[in-house]
Image (cartoon, rainbow, N blue to C red; front, side, top):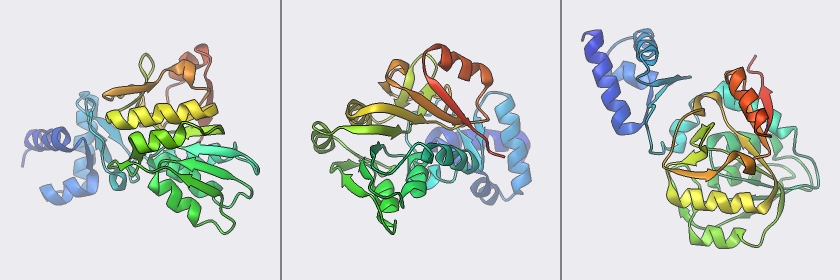
Amino acid sequence: MLATERHKWILGELRSKGTVQTSELAAQLDVSPMTIRRDLYDLAQARSLIKVHGGATSIDFSGEPKYEIKQLLNRAQKEAIASAAAELVHSGMTIAFSGGSTCTAVAERIRDVRDLTVVTNSLFVADQLYEGENGPSVILTGGQRTPTGALVGSVANATLSDLNVNTLFIGAHGAHLQRGLMTPNLNEAETNRGLIRTARRVVAVIDSSKWQLRGLSQFASWPEVDTVITDDGTPEELCDSLDALGVEVIVASTD
């Protein structure tokens, strides 16, 4: 198969799935992973996709990939962000987590913190916290499950309505300088707004692949976000723009 034919096939997969993995593409096209990486690089240079660790995402993708796919993408970046976020958590706090693979990585790092109360609408976050030897007290909302393991809808929103937390760690499908934080799921957007209303401090955990990626629904504008934790792949000028908007930016090193 010629490179142009592979490129067309890869873009077709992206249109239908939103994300692709290098290893799967190599197996499906019967070529080496190196060939696929070159193809993804060429398509990224042509601004046809966004190349991420282990694969690629569609620039215009508005759907939500499954958690099992998301946790494989940009792992080094997410781990760096999670380590930086965990430093903000101390014994005696009441905190909250939204759904998402980055929030789950943060939860893994704080599951042994004593005297901690955690509110979450994420099944995967809750699973991580339950594994702690002296694990936090966990308040898990009910609700309808999304592909990323988040519980959303009226039941989740009702649970959140009377709660108050010190700090919320929240992820996003996309983060845009003009549009704020976004998700393709309308119900998740509403539940995320409910999470934000519970918190005195809102910390967005956003890896560098998410910037300028749009979703169907905005759930937070930048004035509602106190802190962004991102990785060192985020352009410095973007960090400066957030700082000018009054958002604290913490850049986690992937080295």
